[in-house]
Amino acid sequence: MQIMRLILNYIWASMKKSAMNKKILYLFYLAALILLIFVFIQIRGYYLFIKSPVAQLPEAFPGNTQMVIGATNAADFIATTRASGLSEVLSPPEIRSGFEQLISTADSLAAEDELFRNLLESKPFMTGFVPDSTGIQQWLLAFSIGKQGPDKFNRHSKVFAQNH
Image (cartoon, rainbow, N blue to C red; front, side, top):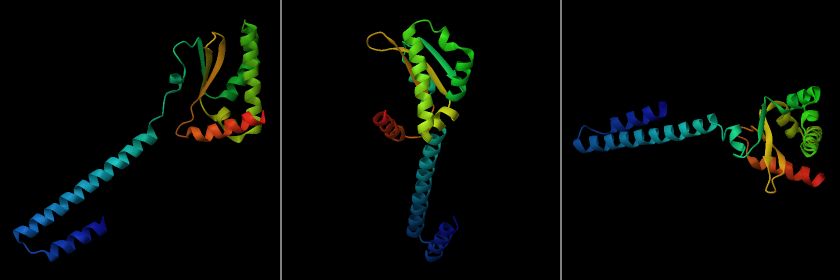
């Protein structure tokens, strides 16, 4: 702001009070004001992008989802589920085995990868039953990852899939 004031003072001092010089000075002020407004709009847009989530967590589930369970983080949910015996309550054997497979996959992910361990231990998540194209119920996990790009998770998923 100091530099802008010095430039304006220099221009003002160099110009005499003729009508043409006043018009040029007003045009310069107008251009500076337009530039400041443009910069403000850009900064405000970036701030709003940072503050707003990409999508709410429940929006990850399709309309035909049978059941949705949410928790503050996956690690606490897994510990509570194991202690409460929820997997024994799930009546169809394919759902029970899918749930146990989901928990074992989450454990192996957490043991092998720091990114997924952080995801399981500190990020809110939801899980639910979603029918696939054949009508069989499948588990769907959704994590709130904030403003991290999907490329980071896609790389980790590909590495994990290649190793298993």
